[in-house]
Amino acid sequence: MSDERWLDEDAGPIVPAYLLTRGRTVPASEAIDLIAVIITAGGLTAPVGLGPEHLIILQKCTKPTRLVDVAAELNLPIGVVRVLVGDLYAQELVQVEHPPPAPDAKVLLEVISGLKAL
Image (cartoon, rainbow, N blue to C red; front, side, top):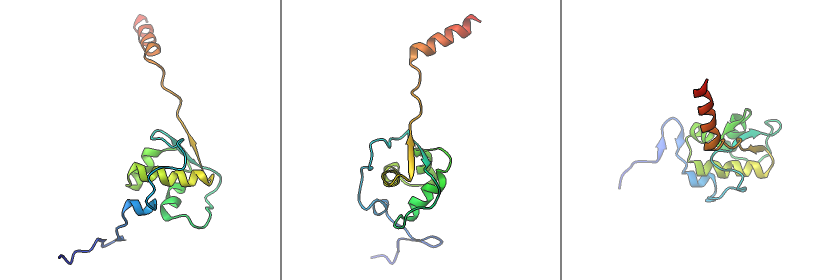
């Protein structure tokens, strides 16, 4: 056996991602997909009982922020961040918006043809 410990000398013990979600793998709402834009609803006063990751998400999303960007900034798997954002969404602490759908290929081809005609 090794005397190696699961520690980061500066940060302390490393917490496995599944502990942050208490083993949950599905977010509270299906509205939270990979391209969702998250915005903190109201102020930053959060109810008691939220974890530090929840609070960080609230702070980072005061401006509209894509879910994938939140995951990248927290250096957490996207599935974990979806569950954490789902917790905040269920408590109405964040809003979840979706970007407008991209135009279909036919419209884009018409625009290209019009530009070429100029």
